[in-house]
Image (cartoon, rainbow, N blue to C red):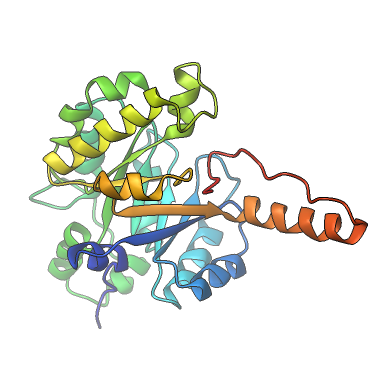
Amino acid sequence: MKLRPSRILRELRAGQNSTVLKLNLGDPRIVELAGLSGASAVWLCNEHVPNDWLNLEHQVRAAKLYDMDTIVRVNKGGYSEYVKPFECDATGIMVPHVTSADEARNVVDMVRCQPLGHKALDAGNMDGLFCQVPLADYAHHCNTEKFIILQIESPEALEVVEEIAAVPGFDMLLFGAGDFSHRIGKLGQATHPEVVAARKRVAAAALKHGKYPAVASLYGQKEEVLAEGTRVFTLGADVIELGNAFKKLVGDFGGSAAASGSDSIYKSK
């Protein structure tokens, strides 16, 4: 029996870009629809979305039908919140609002095996094929085919982003333009020069320390973001695309212009 390798890590190691679709809706069939699009991964949210662990496992299983990775944004702070997504066989976790190198080290220590961390072992779940693989293989897989994303979303985090990026054992830094713009009094202004400068600083820090930069949305700046070295791109969200499609259908039928799209932080255009 063989544990599933990460598609995103495979793409990044081959010098390719990876695409992610953000899903707020909990139906595993939405995950399958995302898989049919050819996306590298889906971003599932346990921070802002009412989901449960069993349904999350069904979503992960649906993604694997299409060789699609699953990234679970966790509730910040708790050991179980960080470990359980991996035990559901999610490929990666995203930890929001990281503000210090100590926080980064604690996350790594909780979810990596020796020599990177001190993860508590229970291979009796899907990520260990229910104890049907050797424990050494399971531990190696945890360290090489599962990934950790840390979100930089505040001025406080930006001030120490180089220290955070230098922590060994995690894989990506994702700049959160939505929360960052809010924190600096520029709500929703993801292309404001101050927000763009912060994004560039996060990407530069990640690259300097061997981490991959990632973004939560393109905001119409694809070429600029590519030039910064970003390799992992969230292209949009199910609720935004579905909402815009519904508005267009109703607007077209009524003979009036479709309602304008949302200015959501996930908007890609």
